[in-house]
Image (cartoon, rainbow, N blue to C red; front, side):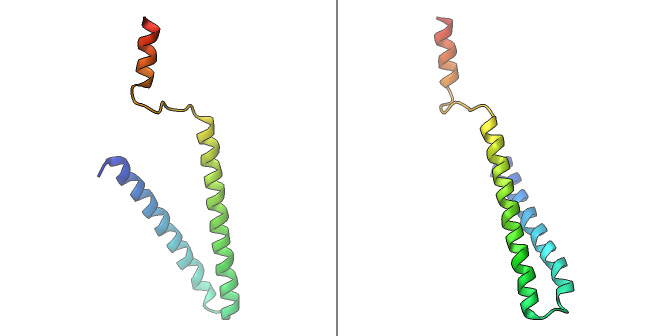
Length: 86
């Protein structure tokens, strides 16, 4: 497994753990509420997480659109340089 793949897996695992810790911390004060109130609060948390994920995806998309495209083939730029030299 490459180092980049390990880093990606570690990052995703930390996102999952942080989300679970957040829900665990949030659910402690909810134990005194009735079941309907608990479900409303947890539904709001899920909607909030989805909105934050959407904002993150849109931010990544804006960054991706603003960066320079890489060549599709590894030797594509090299071929252009060789043509320029001739």
